[in-house]
Length: 341
Image (cartoon, rainbow, N blue to C red):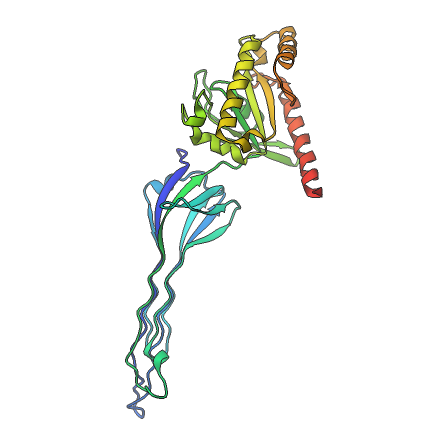
């Protein structure tokens, strides 16, 4: 199914049921008192986060969601049945905004999370509610209240532990396919990946989720190429791996690629730029071993980089195990630090 990461829908909760106008009439009680029951509450509209959903595509064709109206009250002081809630499934990781004001409403971050976005109207009062010592036969009732209605904007952000970023054709999809069971589209031309791809990397009983984000180009933070549409997905990752294609055997090209990505993520968000990030030289199978060491050494001398630096080949698998082991070690260390904080 095509990935869709934004959608706008309309929700309308059910109206409350009307109160009943009724008087008790029995064989030996020809003038019994009022016994009109209250109306039932209207159904809510409830968002529910599901792990089996990974796209907002189903909102392309269903854009209006309504709660069921409450039922009217009836005689013998019987309250009308409440209207059924309307449950709307969304993927885990969906941000919810008011479409008109753009006010943030909620983040559906956990599987099974529920959030009421529109409350059903209160049921009206039957005439028995208005009985008093001075009015023993009230003929007054009230209608049910109108349910809430609003337009919502959904924005889906990929939830992953590790985010891959880099220029187009840096080999992100190849790496994802090499270390996980994911099967992203792979090609030797830019923008092969047009939608975020997720893969699960396992080591014994441990696992993490890796996300392949479409390649970035100059001006991405201002919307060039695939632009900000996918930069935002990186904000939920714990660690960024910046892949750099070194098949050109040029340290100058590697420095330019690293600088371009750093500029884009810094322009887009200081928070994103401050996230832990490792540089991963890719496609070393196209470079002789001696030259690889020379390139890494030259880069370390010429570029102000103090973080981890790896050299791998997503195609042949060389160096991938070392990279994955380092990621698991890093995650374990950080989890221990967070638990002790």
